[in-house]
Length: 181
Image 1: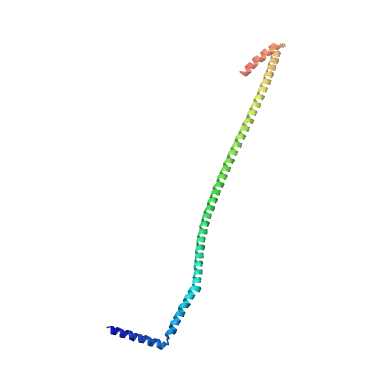
Image 2: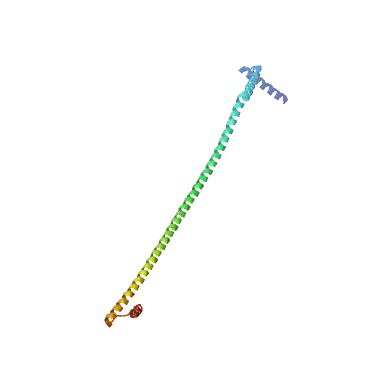
């Protein structure tokens, strides 16, 4: 069995050698080419691909930082909009409150002025009543004098004599008592 394997391995090796021989593979040049290839890969990885990958990684980090900053800015913008909306709502409420206070103040002022006008009208009416009473009293006094004079004159003509001041006074009092009753 081992011989079969050895024969198979030897036949494969001959086949490989024959194949490499057909393509003109020279083992020392092939190994040197492989070493050169590995050396070029190492140099490129170390001095070309490494810095490029590092630069790309730095770019990725900057882009990620930019996206984080953008999210932070969007959050701050939303907060700012909410704050602005709250400030506008508060200012609107304050303006409405001031308008209502102004309306109430105007109503109170109007009510106060109306009360003052009513008080002035009442004062005018009181003065007018006082003046009317004074005129009435004055007219009553004049009327009493005139009635007394007329009664005395009438009595003097009817009686045909001149009345004394005591008679005139007594007749005036009697006539006034009847008029007042």
